[in-house]
Image 1 (tube, rainbow, N blue to C red):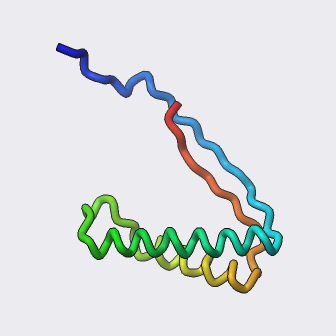
Image 2 (cartoon, rainbow, N blue to C red):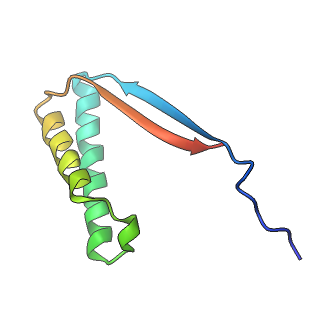
Length: 85
């Protein structure tokens, strides 16, 4: 019998990356944010678990970022994420 896996030794680090806000990066972000929004909306329509669904605030923020990158009016972008090591 295998020993149960323990998460007690797992460390989580917080990282961030600043994205330049030039025309090319805003165009790429625009496409990526649109794709992310679509995938989340499809998952919600297909009935994935409620705990896995983002709130309306997340959809609203993604929509604002999508519009802002289309208008090339975003001044700064920083992506922050947590990763298990």
